[in-house]
Length: 72
Image 1: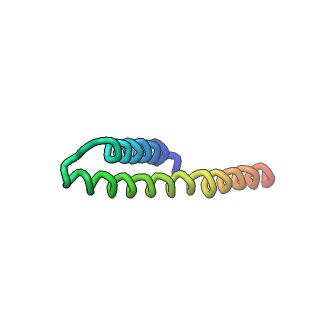
Image 2: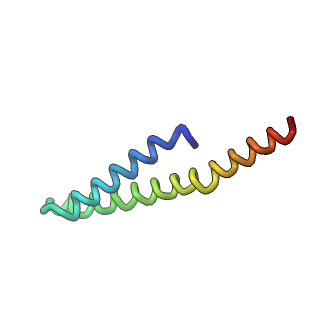
């Protein structure tokens, strides 16, 4: 999971940037539909991945470290 953290942050930045561009500019019809859809997909993917990292991986890793210390 930690190896994917920079990728998830990059996806979130690209998703936010593309949604900002799609909302603030006068774009051709093709980009007018694809940029918002792409930004929604990227933002959802990044938020799910980051929340899994924070709420699942970190507590699991902490519990594993506590267990290893208790066994020693």
